[in-house]
Image (cartoon, rainbow, N blue to C red; front, side, top):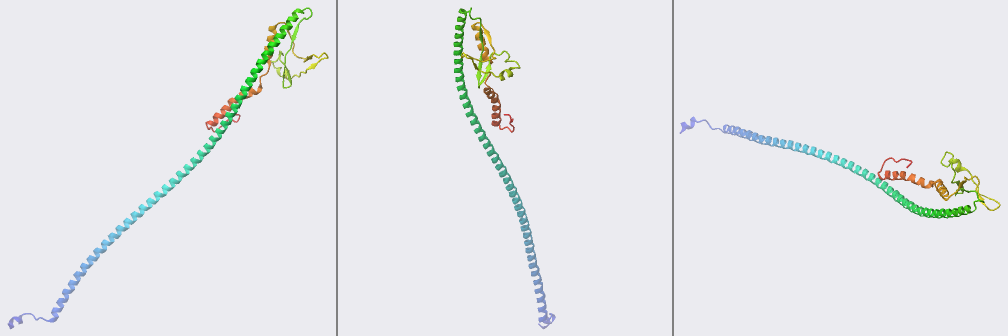
Length: 266
């Protein structure tokens, strides 16, 4: 019994304590390493998460900047479109005003044409009455001259020949309708020549310096009447109106077509 106990190493308290301490320190180092590894791994995960969050934040900021730039461009585009639309509206309003003014001018022109047509109808009626009256006067004059020629044939021994002269009084001006030089260059001189109406002591009325033509038959008298009718000047007012109508029509069509240039004389 004693020999076995003596061969064994002595069990001292110091030995057991030191060994237990070393074991505890080793256990502590391993746990700390494990804890550090766990903490390090957690920190790495957190860093990766933070990096990913920063990347996502940057990408979202870039997308936000792109969206903002797109919205600004869209805003500027809409403003330009709005300005163009406003300019087009103003242009259309000006064209509407111009068309309204043109319509007003056309209405006034239509009214003028209606009045002109009425005036032409009245003048035509008046001229027709005048022509019929002149025809009646011509017939009466021919009848009178026929009677005179009959009387002259009866009184041939006393009456040698007959003479005729024709004149026109227009605007207090006397015109010689039988002048042989009315179609020549001296026409203006003849038109400007002053004629006067004179009365003799017997009560007869005559105009000196008129063209006098000898007549012997009714045919000669009718010929002189036609010549006098052709010698009467046309109405200058109707000439001017007829001349101005084409220019007026050109002016109306130019306004209707919205042309930029209209002749001043029209």
